[in-house]
Image (cartoon, helix red, strand yellow):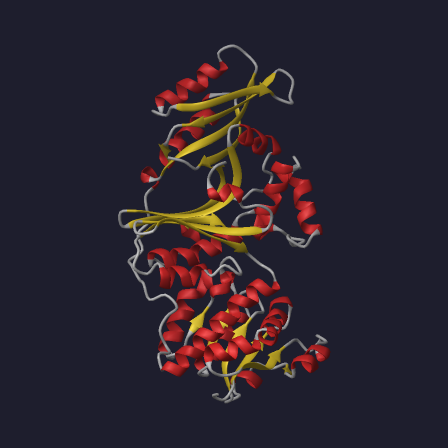
Length: 430
């Protein structure tokens, strides 16, 4: 058996601990798979952290300076599990320049600076892997890069944020309102005390930037993803969607039309018989449409210490195999295409509209006239008493229309009626 491949950890929190656990628990299988031991020898922590007991348990040295890891000639691979943009970006760059391969789970960093770091790794003839950055324990990036490499992907979409999926599940199954569902998610540790990244769709958008690169070869930035979260989503809308045969999910999607793509995140009405409608609580799922395979879905835990650590260790093993074969320096995904965005007038969908309007004769006719003028048809209509006296709440599901048409309808409702447009969501379906 060959000599051990040694690893340096940047960060020793929940995920870093998970990496140590996976390496220890699956030691025999890992050694037989890659032909040598894989061991963490050093971990970078803050001076204020007390990790002595863990260091003793896993026989590793604790250090407070990056140089103690990247200047160690025996360390071949650095694992970054610190999170945030800085100092993680600087540390990864320094590690690559020092000749180390790098594994990270940092989706925020990769979505914003992934191309820069991938180019640096390529220049340094080192590998940068990040399977754990999207959907935790689901091996979706490697599946797209390897197993679907010969296929033509038309659409990649899914539930890529466990916090919001947990909340939406509770809003449907237990009729909780948004605030109660969020509080429960925070109490269980699924949501941070500041849930902004989750509930405003930012976390999901980071992941769609990465998925878009793998699925379509196009590099997009956050400004090119249309992002809408579930903050303040009405429980009434979730309930009426359920009654109409739909489940509301926060969906991240990138769809290809011709040679262009459109990426977005937002609450979507998913038909109850669609596989994504069955994904509950904190679980994630990525649904892929392609010309060769057709439809496929990849499901599992989207976060957590051991699922995320399992993906990190799989990346470590891949790098060891490449070191042994002498094939280092290739990008995680080599597929590259010119970036071209689909214009709004070519992005077509059904829409769910929830409106509050005076409970008076002729009000609905006014809405129908606005829709007719825009060339938009109505597929389903539900009217019920609003909580405000002398007002009605009307919910409609439209036929397919472009984003441009939908924007004009919203503008006309705001300027030409005394209706209040409570919410707008896309509706998945043919």
